[in-house]
Length: 173
Image (cartoon, rainbow, N blue to C red):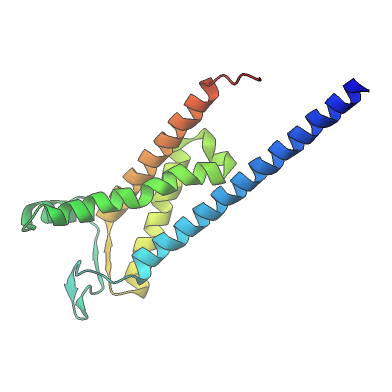
């Protein structure tokens, strides 16, 4: 009788753990989707803080296909150090969560940092294309480069977390 109760208790504990894991996975997936919506909002709908001047005033439909051109211009011609930090570092930071959350939300991405980084690059290209086609903003190859770097950093961070987690030994009490 003790053995049967012990087996039931063990089975109940496993099902409780499984439900907790499913809740966590669902929350992470929802977090990833919320992140994607925020990125789309920030890059396509939020106010454009004068990235270029065009016929529509601040903003304006414009593009840059020359790598590192705007990075150089921002670094050299900004009156203070604040603008380059906000623009350049901001583009990197914007995509770190993509590289970090995508492999958590999509299990197949856990195997490859490069695939996750590539998906981050494709998302950035889609955003930059949309900015040019549908908004009065600058479509910029430098943003793609910086966003891709951010996705890479996030993917490496989660890969390190998965590696460390695999080396942790759990003791049953």
